[in-house]
Image 1: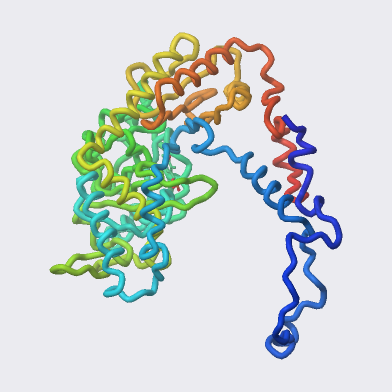
Image 2 (image 1 turned 180 degrees about the vertical axis):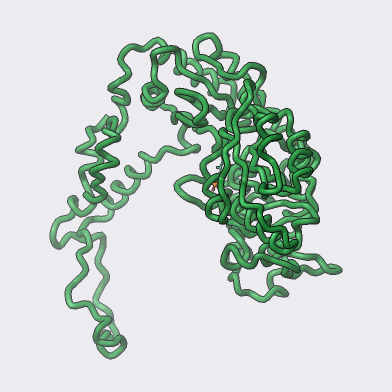
Length: 475
Ligand SMILES: *Cc1c(COP(=O)(O)O)cnc(C)c1O
């Protein structure tokens, strides 16, 4: 292993030497054009750009070595809970690279982009079948934006109905941080709601809080503890009695495909994370798609445009009372295409994805049980939350996993579980990989000296307080 000085201390600029070149071209045999006659004076450089002066092998090695420091699903197991870091089938990439799709301009007239519109329309139909909802919008570019879009639709619904005074959105303590952020950004008060002993929404508390000031409850099912909200139907009834909506955060749809349809469970509107459930390389802020699904009642408020089929052709239409645009053009088309491809590859066997994901999570759970503490009894869904043995820190185990060649799971989330480690293996991992991971987890639970970990990674453990307070974001 190289020291961090050798691996990170060298910028490509440091490797340059004056006059060194990758290659040189022969002198042109036509007259050179002076840019002064082409560009305005103030657009011309006064000095040469300070580019690194390096030979070609140095450039290739520099960037290849940097890319090899990337941690990704293609290099290692990546059990980051709530993120569904599943393998991304290469068939998706092949579909997305078809020149007719990849080269399509977003302003291309509809009649010249019928294939793309058909893909979008079919995806709307698939998502409708999977969720049980009649209406879809593919516009939002991320899960968080799907949430915001949905809550803005709920808001507009009440405005349209002249129902004033619905100022609150209820949010369970297990919620992802984007839920309260969404409610606040949409202009509501985010009102917290507690849990029962199973880690589920406290129904008694909901009975007290759901009233004529409630616009919606945002629920994630299974919730971020990997626990199925078993009272979901009663929760939906309570909200509907209060005249409010049940919103379902669909980031955990990997646990529901073909097994539970949010509309049957009583939800009114939801978002999908197409980049999680239906595979797309994601992380670092994109690309994503937070497609939404909703009931007839909310359908007129969907953002523009929506794809409609008329006879044999497809066209973009605007829902009657639309909240307007939430993204440029037609959503994140590449991600939509990959989701369409992924769903078609599985067909009616899509439920196997869910079954295997749930089985894998429960296998990890069963093997860690006894050494790690399991805060909630009973089988989990597609992810499991565990706690390290008493006296040990989730952070230390996580850093230790890096030395074992694993990406750490999500830690310190959900907030309701102390020292939480949220493990989501996904359906795409083999038993051997899970055994290796569990082996490392069990070994780390016996380790005494994890404060220094990781010791084998290019960078060592950061002083997190210093990194936050004295951030030096330049070299
Ligand atoms: C990932 C996630 C979100 C947010 O989705 P993004 O696509 O990252 O914006 C919301 N809720 C839950 C439960 C999630 O796991």
